[in-house]
Image 1 (cartoon, rainbow, N blue to C red):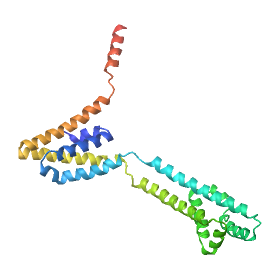
Image 2: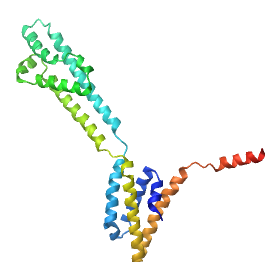
Image 3: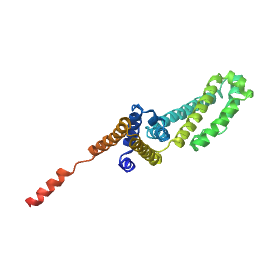
Image 4: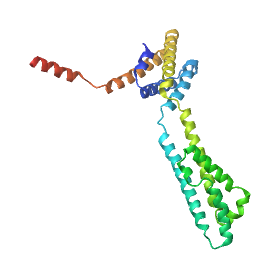
Length: 246
């Protein structure tokens, strides 16, 4: 039985199901040697990677989370900017002085930097926040009641960077099923060949039954695939009858 060629004809999801069923069948066989063989362990290892590869991606959810932090950072910045801008006209001399001191820092790039590339925007935010965190501005932040809000902006910026880089790391770590499909097919073939060899060598009912059960796993998947294919027989018969009638 040409197992690799059969595995090659089924879809990505069906191959995943086949691997899981083969492993489950072996684990339930009661044959310890079948479970501890090098080829079976290799099959389990490849299967674990293959199953992860076919998991639905979380790309959309990750993007939504990153975008939410991006927007939150913008809103916080705008609120602090507008608040300080309003305090520049405060009749309170000390408040006005504190506002001027902080506004110089938050306005170091104006507001137009938000039109820059995303990476450049982040760099501007980092420089602004690091400047506002200096001890020179502690009293001014206390006077304008902005200590907590600036700390929140700092945390949101850190969260955004972590989530953005985490999203990128997930993309780079994700392996496409097609990249390890041949490895999966090869691992299945090698193990089935090993079971076939053992069944012939041992000539025991348990090994023979295991081999037959694994054959059945292939048959089940192939039947499932066949059922999904459209039946064009009726259309061909109709066309033939139309031709005869003509």
